[in-house]
Image (cartoon, rainbow, N blue to C red; front, side, top):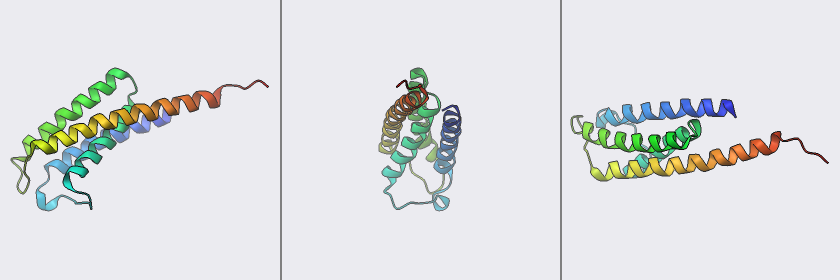
Length: 127
């Protein structure tokens, strides 16, 4: 379980870095997926938040992760105003923040399930 937490922390930090880089590249250089823009925002923040919630399982850390990702979403939208070919939208920041909150919830559920499974698998059975 310890290694899973370690790798989740790395994935969470890499997710934040990817969000920052991809949010601030000029529009012509940004990679596009088949998803609509708002779905891209939601998925990116949800995945990052899930990784952070798995990597930092304390409740206070999860609240901090959701709060920081919501702040990051707003900051990235404000900074995009100065990037050629990009535009800022409050709705994009809102969808990103919601993705972050949803991701923290998913990460908390996954962590609880994994911890329960780990506990059950390492408990000696008498019988």
